[in-house]
Length: 65
Image (tube, rainbow, N blue to C red):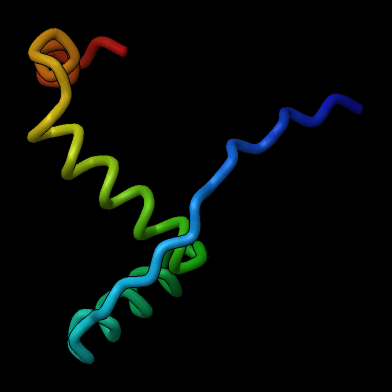
């Protein structure tokens, strides 16, 4: 059976306020995902929205992949 290779990941350490950590834990439980997966997804969505090139942002707005 073919298994795609996982992307290389870099470990980082972040500080969270207790309320933020509680929200993260609640979201992880609700989505059945790990903290690292959820943080990666959230950061990618937020940073892509603000810092990707204009063509990618426009494509995201109109729903093109």
